[in-house]
Amino acid sequence: MSALAHIGAGQGAPAGPDTAKRGSWMPYLLLLPGMLWLIVFFVVPLVQLFTVSLQSKFPGYPGYYYRDLNFKNYWSALTEFAPHFGRSLLFAGLATFFAFCLAYPLAYAMAFKAGRWRGLMMICIIAPFFTSFILRTIAWRQILADEGPVAKTLNFLHVLPGGHITETWMAVVAGLTYNFLPFMVLPIYASLERADPRIIEAGGDLYANGFTTFRTVTLPMSMPGVLAGTLLTFIPAAGDYVNAELLGSDRSTKMVGNVIESQFFKVPGGYPTAAALSFTLMALILALVFVYVRKFGTEELL
Amino acid sequence: MSAATQGTAYRPSTGRRIQAWFANRFALIVAVFVLLYLFVPVAYTFVFSFNNYRKSNITWNPEGSPTLKHWQNPCGAPGVCDSLVKSLEIGAIATLAATVLGTLLAFALVRYKFVGRGTGNLLTFIPMATPEIVLGASLLTIFVQGFSNVGLRLGFWTIVIAHIMFCISFVVVTVKARLQSLDPRLEEAAQDLYAGPGSTFWKVTFPLVLPGIVGAAMLAFSLSFDDFIITNFVSGSETTFPKFVYVSYLRGIPAQANVIGFSMFVIAVLLVVLGQMIGNARKPK
Image 1 (tube, helix red, strand yellow):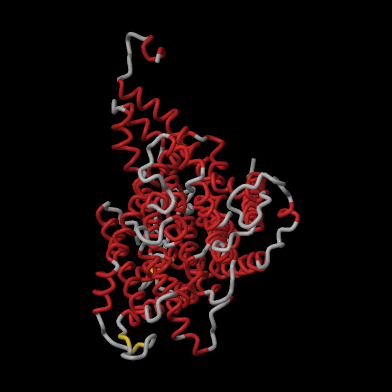
Image 2 (cartoon, rainbow over the protein chains, first blue to last red):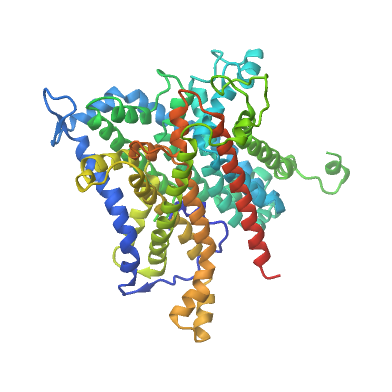
């Protein structure tokens, strides 16, 4: 079972007795095409990326490399682009936090308060996806621009430090929060919807006050969803470069994704650096996933 | 709070009253605001599709706006409809392939115990936990350095290949969840009624899993249709709709992109509402 299974699991009783069968060639036949696809187009490319991350430059021939075990690539990439790495983790962390704050009440309201409006709310959450996320991010740029309504109001009230929203970290974090919010809402909703409201009522019957009931009953019951939602928000946010590109500035808000993108496409001979950065990002995130899942004690990851 | 103070025998504690308030109103109020927030840029996109702009569609031009000219000629900007058609084609092929491959994987992983099941689960999960930029970067390296030797050039089919790859995981997860929530007694009942394994599968199991498969397909299509990061890495000179918008951003996005973006949103909502209505109509009363 995957911790992320909650995203698609709208309805569902807890799994019944294990109905898995043993000892036949059937599962391998079913697995073969999909696994083959994942091996050829996921595992093999990653191995290739890893070898690229260890290549050395051909002296005198910019843009040419030879196969090597040059671990210095990692060191130089990480020291040169440490601020970008830090920003990626910080911005993604902030966006995940804000998304959680917005998503939990929404998921809670959908699960327990919405009644027959539930379906409509679900559509409202998913439908904006179909207006391309690039279009929506650019729309945010205009809305948050200096001459737009938000910045004007805040400046009128003298509460906006620096006087700008776009071209600052605030716009980037806002964009990340906005774009990945549905990935936080859906898993939390799925796990809250599965929770039996009678158990929550029982908390009240046993003289727990509202906050205690929430903290000791409701929140733990929705923990698998919170876990899945946090990962589904943090992972794409940490690797994103579109929000930083469209909402941020050229100097102080670039994230690691921007570096990887520009090393690949704009810097001649940047492949090894880009590959080393990609690999570090992936290793970091996978480590985080496993630590996170261990810490919260859910064995549902696999 | 007169209702809380009128009784002398039982007076809820402050905490309980806060809970009642929180539970009854707070979550719902926040929810409405969050939903409105989700729609702000969609509304912006919609409004600016009526803008009679001169150079770039950034500021509202009161002269001659609102205008219907962009709606009357949605393909008027060069390349915009070509990119839309490409996105729809890629989405359709990738959805079909990923749904078939992912459903087979999900059945194998849920319904059978076999050597390598753990590895199988891991391999289907990790692509989902990998940032898109890493998937894009690794695919670009292999396409450029490896597969170009066998004649595979960056373009339409490399996008399709990449989309199938990242959609499979989401299909597996969705179908698995549905399979795991099935009541095994239904299949046992079918077998008790002398249905063979084939007819049990096609008459009982498959119809029960079908909503999960349809949901997975819809998820796959929306992920493929809206993908930019991976597409940008593996597309070469091919242009999908998100890439068209991103590339034309510097020159100014034509309002036709707003028309198409908003129309896709409306079409998606209508399809989902229609689907729910059909689903409700087919439910036994």
